[in-house]
Length: 137
Image 1: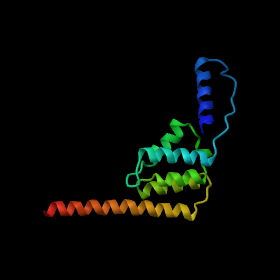
Image 2: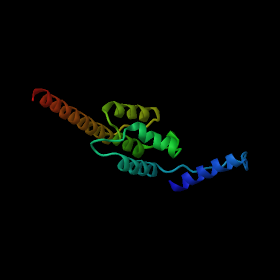
Image 3: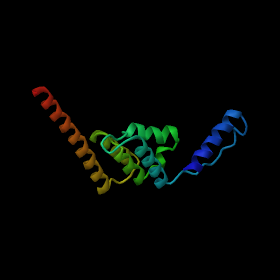
Image 4: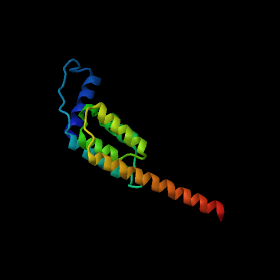
């Protein structure tokens, strides 16, 4: 992943300087596992199990910060994106992205979505319970 990022930075530096601007550099894409591990590190650094980072921050990190094209995403990256979801609706958006990129939705992906729904609804029920206790006492 570092080699990919370094080659992208070098290409931008050459474009800014005006040197070799017409020369096309072939940048090898990182593997699916490398992208997934990078996203997991970002997710673990900025979020928790009870408060995930969300797919917006995850995709922003991959697409804008690291400049990895979405065509390089594979099964591992999409399942890691599912673990970043805050709500089940975000999980369905990841499933739509998977279908758009012709990736099969596995039973493992569905199990992650069930886990996201469990955390989401558990937090929602806990907040409702706090609201009821607070209004009654």
